[in-house]
Length: 106
Image (cartoon, rainbow, N blue to C red; front, side):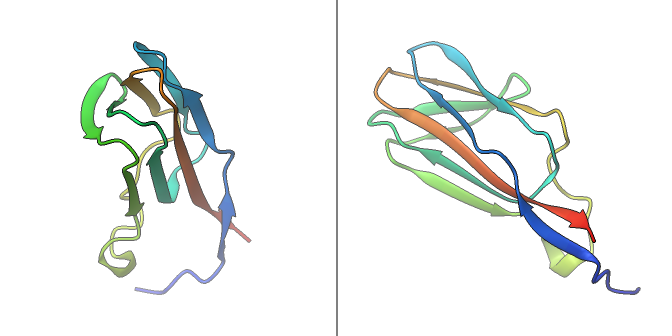
């Protein structure tokens, strides 16, 4: 299997929203991420849902970095899809941010 050396990492626009105490849309992916950073910048826990499925509850100040290049590129298509939407539910004490890099063919 040949290695694809023609892709470059590009930053996508950060997804961010202030928590309100109810379910709010953090954002929708415009590209499929290679590396994604989820950062709870609030002082209370935030329940994160992806496409309306509860995925993980982040403690106050907790962050998570997912490197989607798992298995050294054996499964380069293992990532979130364009159009996936992220929702957060937490008390009105800060923001939740999602930052990601995606691969672009040169």
